[in-house]
Length: 142
Image (tube, rainbow, N blue to C red; front, side, top):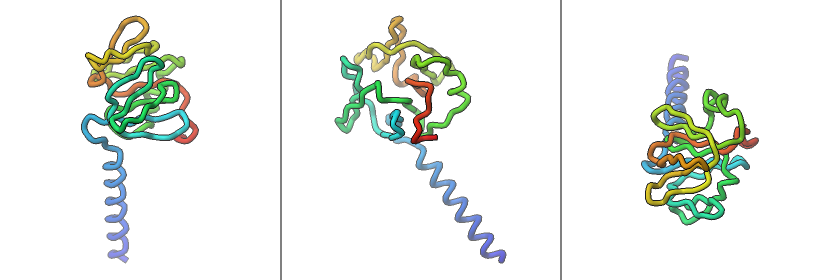
């Protein structure tokens, strides 16, 4: 009995470690969560204007209107404390510094690799923790 309990505990520990490792991203990569529930992982190398499409290192283009959230730190999506802050369908940028900004992304400054709000505020990708484009969690993630 002791052996089977030990094996079960070891298996659970390995499974938990595997799940945690699966959420980590390679350096410089982002997890892009689409409104249809699909998750794409890779490096955003540019934003094509118009119409504001994310260009991934793989060459694929993702329309910003189809994106629910971009996570710059991990492959995780469930941050209820952040989602509770989302009051409108504005774009919410959570910075690594802890600051939160909301507005509408209208441009991308390629020279600085930064998203730009309609107000002119800019946010370099390296400073971003997460960006939400909609407050509604995609059905495929719930």
